[in-house]
Amino acid sequence: MSATRLLVLGVVRMYGRAHGYQVRRELLTWSADKWANVQPGSIYHALKKMTAEDLLELVEVEPGESGPERTAYRLTGEGETQFHVLLTQALSEAERDGAEMAAAITFMTALPRKRVIGLLQHRMFKLEADQRSAELLFEESTNWGQPPHVRELFRIWQLHSETSLKWLRELIERLEAGEYVMADDPGRSFGEPPR
Image (cartoon, rainbow, N blue to C red):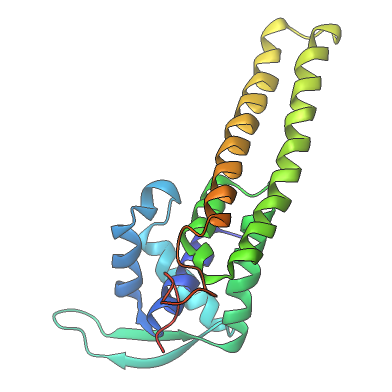
């Protein structure tokens, strides 16, 4: 999965229907080009590819104000399912890269609160196992006959796991305390399609 795929589906879903320029503008206002490496060309490519995969459908072609025509898209039923699958995977799987997790955090409010907490707890259990593995590897690495500086690889893994776990525990606590408007809360959550 790529962060671009989740972000594009999420933005089109959020608007109900959106054209490529609108998706691009929205993602650039979030600085997604910096934290998810979402480039304008990849947005348009994703829109076309997901249309071919029946995740998006072409709704209308509008004349451009001073340029090319604008094609508007909306999610299909399969696109809605794919959005939820990608979001769920990115929130729960510790192996996902940082851009995918960042994209998932952006749209986590599209899911019910208890669901997000459960997915993040699942991720936390995996990260705790990673942290234990990193600690053991760091402690045992001097016995392997490797150059001493190789230990730094295990140390950075260990520190990354510690920091990720601290942030994750704090986020779960905030969610349990009712912070943020989620899909099952009164009011409109971020990323929710228009009614």
